[in-house]
Image (tube, rainbow, N blue to C red):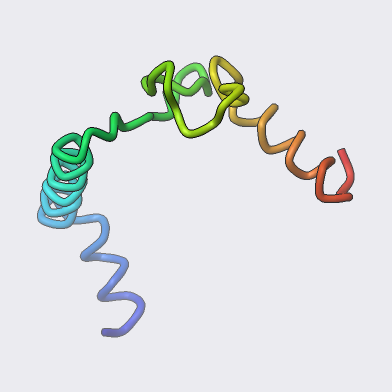
Length: 81
């Protein structure tokens, strides 16, 4: 598919509908396996959801803003702050 045609499709209501349906299905599948999804709140930049028994033993991401998480990850991997 040519890039311009793909771009038009990705901005269409049909694409949004199909993407939302795919996300809803993925969330349902996770929940049936006992996995509680975690979301990024776009307004605050904070992480929402999860549980006390998350895979991270110390809940390192709990309540932190995404920019802070990414910054600490870059620093840990030897990158600049």
